[in-house]
Length: 209
Image (cartoon, rainbow, N blue to C red; front, side, top):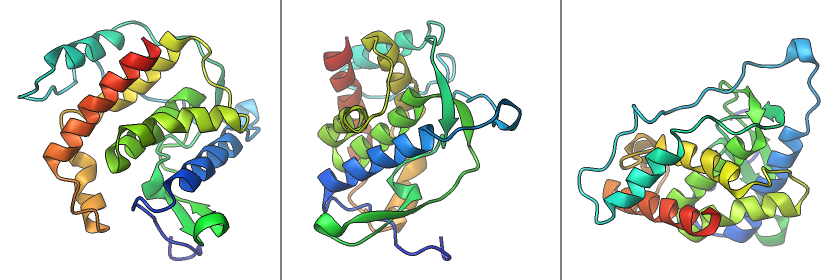
């Protein structure tokens, strides 16, 4: 990160422009041609129905129960591509403001994998929902498709990847809270993140069934 221009931008400024740039960057990453013998490992799921930690207190326990049921089924069939696998605003460098805002680098490639584009989109979407609220998390997939990205055309299949990623942050996304707070987001308390994660799951069910 010290060798590249730009900086992390975790605030809500220019969020619409940032979301579009994140979507375009993902399309570029997923379009990288990789010869069969040079491909990275197949993606690894970061949670499972048996490993999910549910929140101790929730006004909507049925949301969490339904989410766990979604990932009990086998993963949907998918068209594999090159994945960053940990793509989110905390791993992307930006310069400029407004219309001059641009991505200058993507860092932290240790989880590089071969798998469904939906999973990278899911991971970045969850992070956006936690950082900026549910609407931000729900917009990325639309931007991704609008700039040429291809996602599972079955809503249930896409829902699986989105929920699989979101549940890896349960129960309160505390695993990402500390580094984000250290970067200036003191507003992201455990309770705020837990509520956003629950609201995000509900929004996924409302949209994708």
